[in-house]
Structure formats: structure tokens, C-alpha cells
Length: 321
Image 1 (spheres, rainbow, N blue to C red):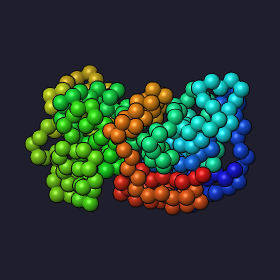
Image 2: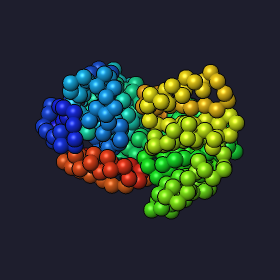
Image 3: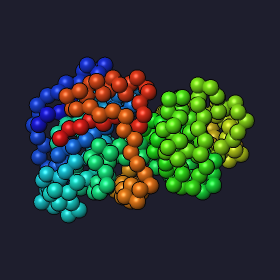
Image 4: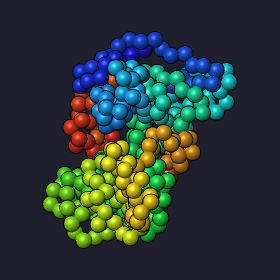
């Protein structure tokens, strides 16, 4: 099979399209013929080992897993003899947070991993987009912030892969939503359901005097200290950036004061139930994918380079099968 192989850390040029052995499913595994995958900022971080602590988790000198990619959608081609939850021909979507491997034509995963049947009203490319931003936003809003109906929620980076789904999910949960984005993305964020949109090129939300129950920094470009005055008395600041600063602030705010700073490793907290919940929202017409660009597998390096520019809207997908 063809796969994008990364044998050393570095720029997108380290990614090579190669022929590798097709994986064989174990007794409790399914083999998925991948139709679509995603390139995310996290993939870029793993590829270049930035931040440096990536090396302590995924290989000090070189990547522990040569095939990157977490999110995938595709068709089950074969199953192990003990598999009960799926059958050959099932169209599925899900994530492989432990061993990666989605940037390839095939991937074997245990049937108990975060996998579910694909939404019937979505293409493979659209479905894999849900696996990226929507799963992350769902964990942050529902589990970390414990979002409630009627709350005031601000999404910073509302047009990105996490932010675009955070806007939609916050509305589904009954919140009043303010999105923050650049001028060119104002109409997109409005179309996703935001009640108000702030253009950060002309207005600084931390200085407009308004307060919010939840500030979700979906692009990790702000800080708790800068946003603290924009939180209500018991407000929560969420960030997707696992910096040393936010870890210290989490510890500090857990002991002192009513305002909280939070980060959560959303990728390690996923399960089938989350995917099924999101699938039901999609099939009910309440949640939609936002796809910026599509690249073939052979242009994966170009996809990484585009993502690293930091201006993508929603998802950047790889069309594989």
C-alpha cells in the first residue's frame, strides 16, 4: 500500500510517499481502507517535534510511528475472527490517537477504539472533518467547561478546525455565541450560527468591556492572564495550547479564586459514544463540516505546509482512496 512515511523530524520535506506492507488485522482488529484523512496543527507538531516534549512521548531521535495522521474515515475491508461490533463493508469514521497511521491507504485498529459508523448524509471527506475539530470542541465545551444553556460563550479562532465546530456545538448546547476571526472569515462564522462576530483586526475583545462565562481560545493564541478580566465571576478560560504557562495557571486557579484556566488532552479522551452523539447531530442536520482545501495523498507535504501558514478555514483533508 502507499503511505506517507516520516522517518525523521523536520520540515514538510521529510514526508515521503512510499510503498509499505499492508497491515494484517489481529483477532480483535478491523482493517480500514482509508478514503479520507485530515492534516492538523497537531500533525505538524508531531512531524517537527515542536514543542520539544513531543520527543519524550513519540521518539527522542526520530518519530516512534513513521506514518502520521490521527483522524480517518473509510470502509472496513476485513475483520479479525473475534470482531463483533463491525462487519466487512461498514463505512466508518474515527480516530487513532495512540498509534497514528491515518496518512496511508490502510489502517488496522482494535474494534474497541473510538470508531463508529459514518453519518449517512456525509461524504468521507466531510465525516473525517467531524473527527478533527468537532470531537475536540465537544470535549472542551461539554466536559471541561460544562457548558450550560443561556451562557455567554466566546470562541477565539472561530473559523479554524476546532473553532468552526465549537461555534456550532455551543449553539446546540443553547449558549449565546460570539465568534472572533479575521475580516475575510466573518461571513463564514455568521453562517455557522454565531450571534455576534468580532473582527480581531479592528477590535480587541479583551478591551471592549464585555464578559463571558466561557472563553474558548481554539487556536491557543491568547492567554488566561490577558482574558481574565473578560470572564464573568465564575468564568472559564479554555485553551488548546498545552503550554507550561497554562499548566501552572490551571494549578493556581484550581486552588484560588472563582475563575478557572483549563486545558484538556481531548485526543486521549475520545470514545465511541462521542462519535455516535456527533453523528446523530449531523444526521439531524444540526452540525456540518467546514472544509478549506482537499489534497491527494501524493501532495501531503503541500497540505502540511498550507496548514502551517496558520490561516486555514475549518479542515484540510487528504483524499486517499
